[in-house]
Length: 173
Figure: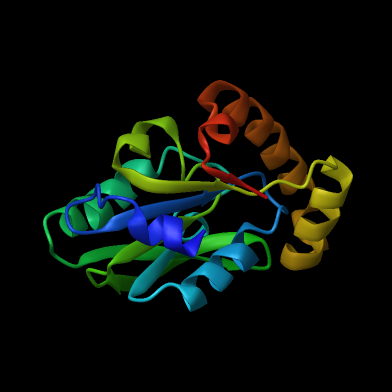
């Protein structure tokens, strides 16, 4: 897959944009971390740096305006990270994203339909057992997140059904 990513055309100006998408608790973060370690000259942005329980996907313009558009123009991007503490999101530090050869965007809705024309590669990660995904997410985020995660998972089900992300992916795991 690394060779496929590197052989794909850059569609975000000089940058190959790779999305690692799928439902919560499916191993997207771990997979993206492994890709980041294997890809030369890559940067990673996580959708968890943008999303909140109340705003699971409408934050997208912040990513476009702060990161994708500047990188497309060959300039560094910048955004304010959402920091999660005890299941509560708050505004964090600014993050600068240099212009890389490959930008990995990891997280729920990273491969959404609106960005697909700019994507060089789309990876779909999924654990099919919803209870297992919930258990993994609660283990990661804490028991206080169980109820918000149940609501989040219900939202994801509808989002992915409408967006068709899984079917658009070049790689599924």
